[in-house]
Length: 553
Image (tube, rainbow, N blue to C red; front, side, top):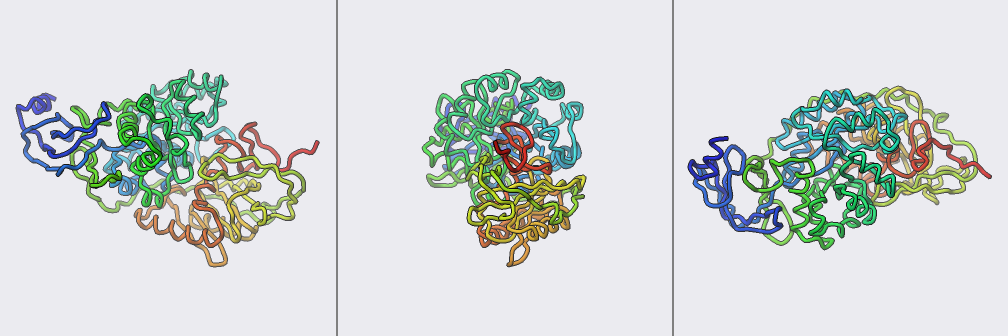
């Protein structure tokens, strides 16, 4: 530290001084033409300094490294090192990752995987520990993480808090295990979709500090008024920025962060990462300076990371040099004062996939009865679903005219069978889709226009020990996901190409855009309103399993 102080005072040279830049200051939301100096990867001061090396930024705008406040790296379908290769060129230098996807599959081994791979990724992959593995007690995946399991990670390098607390009933009902988890860390992420009123008051009182599930301005404004940080989200299917953009004002920017949550590799490659969120916010009328505040300093402050979020003395020299022009585009990314260069593909040491699913037969997928059925309705650009009550004759499914298809979730860990329900909104006209990515337990989920196609698609997932599969008359397209059944082990460019092939085939089958992302959330019981599990249909409002057909009065 003594040498750093001497460098900051100008008594000894810095390592590098960066001149000719126009720096964004998130403390004042202003721009300043100034140089800055770096020693040992840390900014020692702004202004003119002697240094062993000088880098002329040529009048470019310079902003602090961008921070994703909440992400599941597994949802990109990339291993952590490949994820970094994909997002760092977009200006992201830090992500706050909740590894509850791989933890639901592999438990503590999955958390260790993200920590180990993140440490060699070249960017800061910081972890909030999964608080809900399983998401709810009945939704068993491949592992359970107890409070004692989480305590064993406390104090570990790279662990910054408790991940999203999805067990709202457990919080409000005083579940001892839930409350033991809440006591481990002072930083606690929330997850409370559509929670309002006195129950929201109680949830905030319990110590949950943030929420990334807001889908409307009114919902976000209520939570903000109660003191929560609002993580404004834009994933592959969770498209919330348009609704939330008016929330971001000079008075609220200190409580608003940006997050991608779940974004496939092809979306990252085409739309970008946090830089893409900034472009969208600007397009929705938010001043660039406020969007940058949310993407840098606010996210750092939310997680008590005083070492980043601004280009200022004592902070990491993580910053981006912007390209010329009015549009926000990152030209170069610097981490700890060094310009990022692609390190190339590095193989990951992955947890083994757990795929012991019994291939369902026609008898497992059979539906019987007539009456008013509970049909899962997709909502475009959201992961919440609708509960649609429709007259249905099971013998007439699939009903392509009304876009009602069969959906099934097969237990991939114990081979205990499959739950079957109905879904509206995929638009599929032929074939079937199946995947081993199915939040949060990550069983095998499938939809299709015939039992034979569904069985073929599920069989391909099983044979590949995890995959995303499209089956149609044109053939079978597969993206293998051997890393826990969640992530590909190929370079990110190859994963993007495989996703493109899947997209081309699913479009030819009549499907909506991003069908696999919508498919992956059909079993997520902690998101309203209607879901499907290996047990059958689940009503998220009643928080209970329900029969497919409503009881007639």
